[in-house]
Image (cartoon, rainbow, N blue to C red; front, top):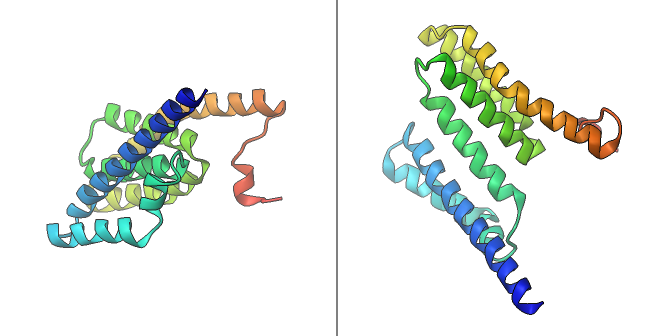
Length: 168
């Protein structure tokens, strides 16, 4: 039992450390798209030292917020990197974003950034409006499976997201 607990704790700790390091690396590359390397490095250092990131990475491991942060940073980096992308790429990005939602419900609010990004890309760069349709089509299958899982879990068509707007 003690060895099994130790192995479980090590696996959870290692996965959290890897996700946290991935979060910091992807955040650095995301910041590099907009700022010089020095400012990007200082920003990531401020993220690591000025928030509870290191605490939850190294001491209280297994926190879903670390993995959610990794997925959110990866989704944002992917979104700002997709210029003149093919329809299939928008479809895959929609699938990836819906997987992010499955990991952490709070990432629903990333929709605001995605919609604003589509508006800016449409107005400035002339992206095809169909990209939003392909993105939505990619997100639909995984979200449908999530809603089916919520139905099986709660016995009614209920979404865990209802807690975001109604905390009672």
